[in-house]
Length: 228
Image (tube, rainbow, N blue to C red):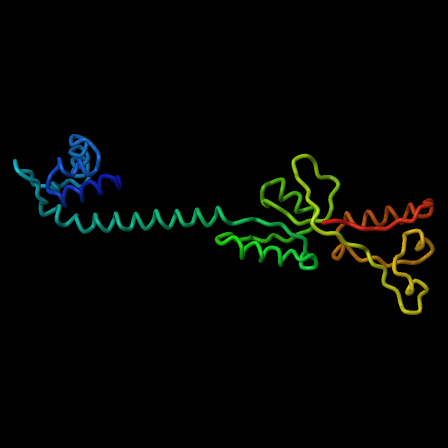
C-alpha cells in the first residue's frame, strides 16, 4: 500500500468530496478514485459510502482513519530522521593523522575549525604515513596530515603546514654539548642510537640513514629536516 494513497484517503475523509480532495491534492479526480479503489481491494473492505451528494466513511473507513493518520505521521518522522542522518553524514570528515599529531598543533587546528564551522564532525583515523597514503587512495580518508612523502603522484596535492628538525641528545660532558647545530659530517666518527620506527616515520629514518652513509664522502655540511 503506497503512502501517497493513504494520504489521499485521509484527504477524502476530511473533505467528504472527491472533487474537493482532488483539487487540494493536485491530481485528477479519476486518478483519486482509482487509488481509493486500489486500497479497498487490498484491504478487501469498502472505506467509503458513496451518495450523490457526498462521500462518507464506512464503518471500516472509520476504523482505518486513525491508523492511516498514525501511519502518515510515523512515515513523516521516518523521512525526517533519515534526512537528518544523511545531513550529518555529509558533514562527517574522515581525517587521517600521524600518531604524533599533537606535537604539530594539529589537534588545535581541528578544534578551531569545528568552532568556526558548526555541524562539521571529524572522524580521526590515526596511523603511519604509508598507511595514510593507502587510505587517501581508497577514499577512506579525505585529507591526511602526514610526513613528507616523495612518492606522491599527481593524484594528490601536498601542502606543507609545518617543519621539524632532528635533534642530537648528548651529555653535558660531550664536546657537542656546546654546539647549537650539528651536521651529519661532524657525526661521522660517532656512535649514534637512533629512535625506532614507533617514534620516527620510515621515510624520515630512511633519509637520515642515506645522509649518514653518504656523509663520509660529502664535502658539504648537511642538515636533516622534514616537513609535514
